[in-house]
Length: 461
Image 1 (tube, rainbow, N blue to C red):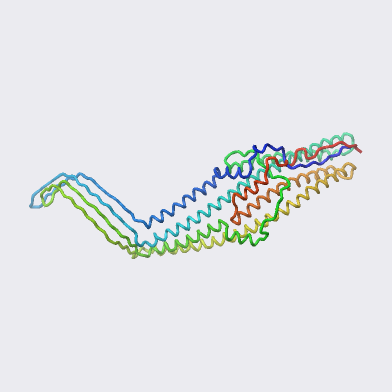
Image 2 (tube, rainbow, N blue to C red; image 1 turned 120 degrees about the vertical axis):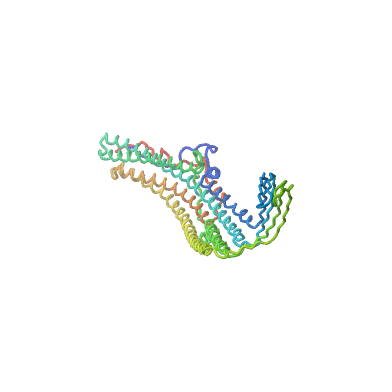
């Protein structure tokens, strides 16, 4: 009797450590290559220019003008002499204006500060998002590798089961239907392998989007890794931390502050403007005509200084309209802030439960790996004595491979959820990636082996 022996292992052939990329490698490549993050960098630099522009509104403006001309003058006085002359003229001037009171312009600095603070918060959020996105793409490839390894191992196991079924049918030990059932399962398994191969290529393409180059061999999660519950083990504490430190919420607060300051900017349209002004200028000519007679030229200089006051008396209602517009935008920003606050705290709670659920799932699936193997051995024994069918054996084999695949993917999900929790709380950093990176190894045990189920020899009844 032939007996099918179970031997499920964790991973495919391992490559030398130097040949594998780890999570930190992927993240650092993404820092230089990810177009989404590069947009965030450019947006921050753009926003930071608002500060010098706002400060410039408080500083003096100095202008210089000059003109050199060739003039022709012809004067004909009624009942008087006629004279004409051609001459050169030069004019020049310097103007200085120093704002003393421009309420709207001065308030622009507060608006700019809030906008820059908002941009910095959004950039910090984008940096954290890049960390989680890189990790998601990284573990997405590992998930796809697990699924493909399981599909290939299952295909090979079914192929061996089909070969054995044909041998047993040839000697009259089983019915034709068992062979056909094994053949149907084999065809389905082939389709699953094809789909898994396509899914892996898709996952690798998604990772390439982030790092800007084809990914190499990736380091895998080591076996025997100790997975622990998040600390503090309190959902409300993580909600509170998110409300205080989440970068998206910080950005929304600054957006609301900027909108509030913009109301004052709009109100400033009702106020007078006061400027200190000064000018100096002069002119020179080497000829000219006056009172019907030519002269040899002239030199003139003028210096002036004073205060200019501009009072808006009526603007057709435009200023009042701008105030109402700014007030509505502030109301909108406050509502958006509340929306973000609720979303952030909910996401923190979801992420906390996600870590807890993933941890419990890993523990349950670790037990499932053992129980499905035991069930397969029992089913195989029943098949050999005729109490179980080949369908039962194939189902039991499938359960083993699914348990192994689900276990590996659950470990990946746990690690991802820990990063998402840190991001939701606003405290995710490269150190957190480094902590996970220490759990990875290019020499980690293989995923589901293609030789997961191998036949052995025994006497047939």
